[in-house]
Image (tube, rainbow, N blue to C red; front, side, top):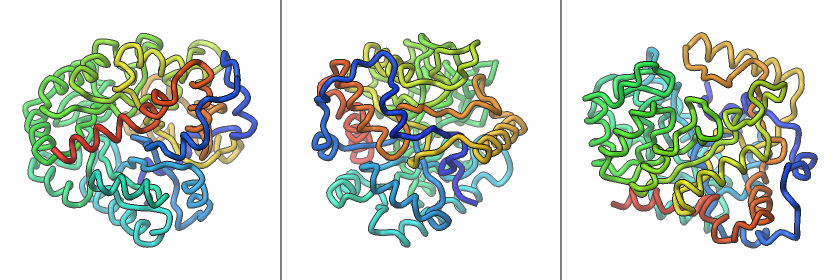
Length: 377
């Protein structure tokens, strides 16, 4: 079983070449964000993924073409359930196998120097993360153990209530638990990045106050633009930024402005609106990208439609589906899709007046700074 976050089935698209010219409300001028600029930049997807390169070698080509410096990938099944710790071990073993099998394309990232080495070598670094603390199963000593196994980013909760606190879909909104306080302390003590994605509003605010190191929210959106529990309020966004943290905006349906209309999927203009709102609230030094999607270009067809239906049914059965999910919601941005979506986004933002320095911070510079600060503390 390959890592859940590596599976592309929720992130379908119509193709990069056709989509790149469709960004609504963007006046395409001669780009001031060039390929040379992109090649020099640290480029991080703070929550991403890809399929199984053992089964599909074209994934390796897509990773090379992407120009990514590193991508943070999830180890283990998300949410509450049995054998979560064993699942993490299984996923780490598989990802370690990929690192050993494809050393010309993939590089392990455990330290800031590893991140710099991945950039220098032109390989894509893999950062291992957990998307909740269910794998701890109440054993606080597992935080250090999981660090030793390669985990560098640990998310406190998923959508529902866990031992560490309430997720964004928990109606009680009870915040961080006593065990969660211990977990945050151990994450800080082990120089791991605390990720507050999927957290309930109170959980995010309390955890931000409790952590001594800057936190991350690797993949979210802005609730001021779309009232979805997966998106964060301006108050929460500002609190994370004020603590020195970084907020990553995802490429998902939770950004869409077409709620209540037949347009189920988000559009390029929705992503840009959330990015610019987050910049206004957090400041340009505290925003980034966490696509929560894959690297390859995907085509919407009968196969991917069927895969999405199965995926959504599984999430509903597990109780982890969010408002905005659905059997026909594919979470694609046709304008920004495929291996070259981030340089395309950079050009679109430059056409709107973003400077090269601002784009470089967004597409990876800010997360690289945060990860370096926490890992080397």
